[in-house]
Image (cartoon, rainbow, N blue to C red; front, side, top):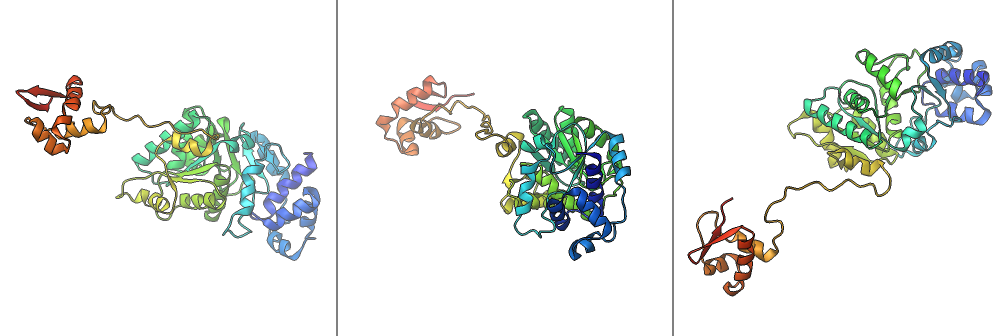
Length: 374
């Protein structure tokens, strides 16, 4: 991409509030350089003219690219090899979403070494409430650590609470993590996460469809959420209230056909109420990273079976177990009494009783049988 084309893309990224389907279609039709020139002159259709009228005379492309260069970042366009084409393809086919909202970004401003096309091939978003509980923070950190240990990138929004915990855990495990911002990549938000976002940019990537200097706004967070969902093979909501931005991210994931997962919490916790609503609505219940990898990993990459506590009764067959359970916890029973309690004829009891005695589970005492002390 030459300098003229780069400036054209930078200008176009600011001229209309993203996502803008009309602008994207116009650029695809005539190319970025011609589109920028015609938008600047107002020589476009009536619909696009209305959307660009307020900003078309604002050309900060040179300054924006200078900021990007100072940060060591790069401007991604749909023509770049690093563009996550397949990841964004689902956004155009999101049922129930207005066409104006259901659009890939026009460009992406990126700061960090990670290639987004590689990240999107094996990534999971971990999102949740800003007012996270100790339980939520523990689970989010455990999930993020387990995912990066399995070569899964962690995508989130860089916010306080669950987002921040997920990023920190991924960094601590020396894994890949991506923060998608609702403002320019040179505007750390929240300010308290300035150092965290700097570390994400050094080890992973900080991404935004907004040019430098753009301040976050409420509607931009909701717009940003579609990119968090699109860059991820699955979305996990760790904690969320009934009204939560995390639920919006989950809704975007569902609309573009990505698995939505939720972590259950205490039924008395308002921080988990949104997760429980998602679970009732069909979200997949997850409690550990291995279960999430089943959704974002390779075909056949299944979670191992949970280890279950072993007991001396595990190797008994059905008859032997019935005989054992027919014995009282205290005291002894004769063969006839065991036969009544188990429903097994007395003449068929001696084989199972001998097996139980050899296993050290029962002892014989004066013609009766009792459970052996442990």
